[in-house]
Image 1: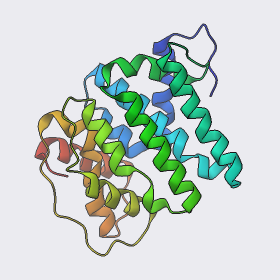
Image 2: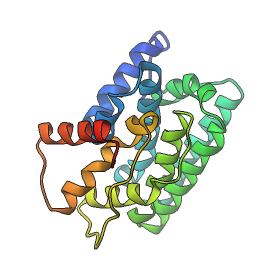
Image 3: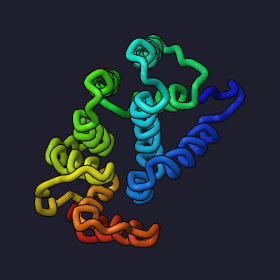
Image 4: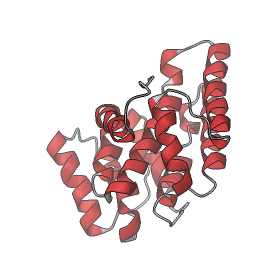
Length: 212
């Protein structure tokens, strides 16, 4: 999505927030519990991830897919030089990167992993675990403890069969806005189709009960 040069960062992040609410409601719900600055960073991260994930939807040709992933690599390299393309997500990333230690490396790894999953035509290898790791790092406590849980969550959200899921995991209060949505995997494992209210209650329970 291109962005007029006159748009403020606030306007851009507001647009991204609306987009994530529409296309990634579960993560969006968790992000509501973060302080403003951290919430904005989460939304920007999820918007970047969505751009990578949707490559498999908008193109089927591997060459075109490679071109799209390379576009994002080039955009990150330009950001490192202080240049930003007129694209909502790129402009928003420019504001987020100073807050994310090793951010360029981490986002580059997300691009690589999504590209590999695209070429393999295997959604099970999409980097859901890496995304959670980056999300928790935005709160100063990078954690790999929820990687397996994140992969289970993603598979169940897609409607894939998961033989057995891990028990509920305890989460520190600081990290809950980054992972509270993972609690939904328990309802999905039971085959329950949740209403909008039930989703919100599940995320709230994760925030209050400290387990996902």
